[in-house]
Length: 214
Image 1: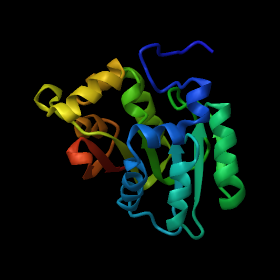
Image 2: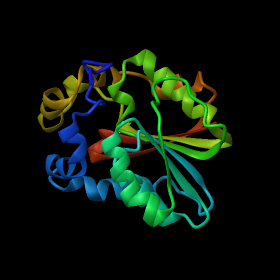
Image 3: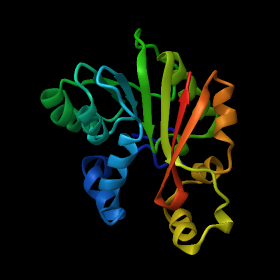
């Protein structure tokens, strides 16, 4: 299938999608397991929360969220059939999660509201004008006082970063990511009605969980 965004790494090849979790573990030397657990713990999920996971992938993150839920539920959105099968196997049967094949880069309406919307390492892979659509989709699906959690790169000066951060970033990241780290994301989110920001930093400050209340 032809990529909509040729310069992006968001649209995965079938091989990468099928082996995504294993490849991510290898690429991060196993650090991703502990990091994602800490990041999801920092979200302070409530037992009754209804959570929308945009670009949910294999369901790995959704399953971790279920640790904090009792009556709450996770709804995952993704466009990949391969990811859908993995998500259903991991989360729909054992956890009772929901999945919907849905693009997040076009306006959509699920006809329901959520307490939290979560997106992990997806937003940086879109052109900036498309990011605005994704943010508006998140805002449109949040309840009053709901929280949008963006787990992605922090804002930083790439050229001033040490070699251990600068060189891998330049080697593996798509052009859109270079633009992403230069943006003032709290100011951008304010334009869509978000407020009361909280930040948690990981990976020596180069990754951030930015939480914004609507």
